[in-house]
Image (cartoon, rainbow, N blue to C red; front, side):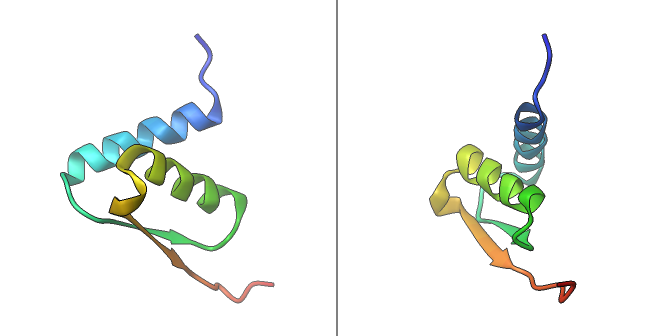
Amino acid sequence: MTSTAVDLVTRAVKAAIAAAGPGLYAVACSGGADSIALADAAIDVAGGSHVVVIAIDHGLA
């Protein structure tokens, strides 16, 4: 079976949430595709009421 990038990110988020235990999770998001994918996976795995997305402006643009 071939894993997609989405599968890999989802598995990593599930593992991180399992290790952290129940609670509220913060995801730093620069707005790039990778951080948006991470935030989306965290919301899918933990549920939207358990995830806070924090916008970070690196000032690189």
